[in-house]
Image (cartoon, rainbow, N blue to C red):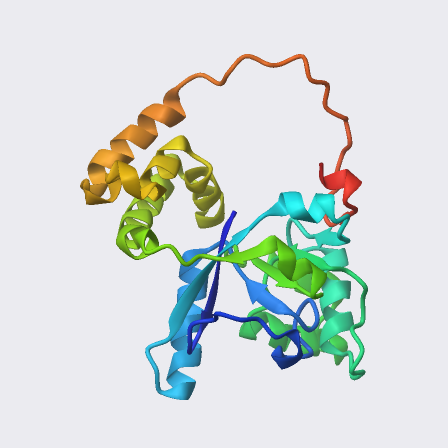
Length: 252
């Protein structure tokens, strides 16, 4: 899965000790699967440091999480469990992490939401009213890598081809959002998992020299194709409730 980090400089080495404390999911290195969200943070942090801001791209390999049996927590949406977890981390005054998860994924508490969190703590707004307000918030996404072990599932993209394809990626994702009516995160995952993108990322195909509209046409043909027939492999029927803690075995 492609993920992005927006900052005032490019990131070539991650030092968790330099990461801010008191964030939504605790101290850690934060990325998002939504490019426009990373772009917002790059511009915001860039203004503070008088730079244009930079988006650093990574590949998040969830298979490594399973192999290394990392402890992962995922929130599918704003809910009671998300609120309690964010409050726990934002009010943590200890140098020690308030939880023992390797990776935490879920929605973002932006400036407006963070302000309402403190209103909730000051009993200026009820829990029910606050959660109701959150249902009207636009979709957001963040992943926090909280431990050194978790960083082994995150690989920095260094291929030169990325610089050539980034404008193509953006145009195609925007077109998919319009044509399929999906969120940016859903669209991004669909695109980067496609065979069409695999060909585009292969420099030998020289797909990056083609107009994005031509590549998008190929992608739509691929997405319209019927799925392959089911195999004899039996999958475990593990169900996941919204906001449920995910162990390594549960995520397979």
